[in-house]
Length: 193
Image (cartoon, rainbow, N blue to C red; front, top):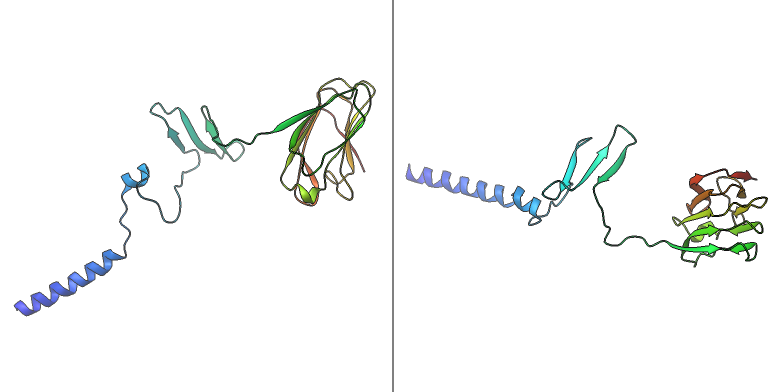
């Protein structure tokens, strides 16, 4: 009888040691406080759920499924490494042609086309995949225009160039590596094949 109990205890000990040795022991407090990493998967919040930060729930991150399916951050936010967007002004008295090159860091162009027509030519779309360019007419151009050209065989939404003669018009474009697409616009822009 003692021998049978000893064998059963030994078998149970082996089963328990092998069973728990491979098992993951979760410690929720350590996971939340950063002491234990979740080796796979990720936290998952239901639609409309909010993850808060700060003792007074100063900042929250949520997913808005009812309005426009987007991630929303409420409260003040400071990005540790924000994208710095450099800008330049294309003055009214300067020449009428500006060529943006792939090596140019400038992303925002404030344009004064009140003295002469202004044409800005984008770089080869293949060289600036994902980069955003914003062009803004900052002075009423009167009878002049701002023209945004695609280069070579590239296009902007299927056309060669876009023009505007309306003060405060703005056009934002980005390349997918083969062509430019309009990411946002303000005012009136005319397409030209």
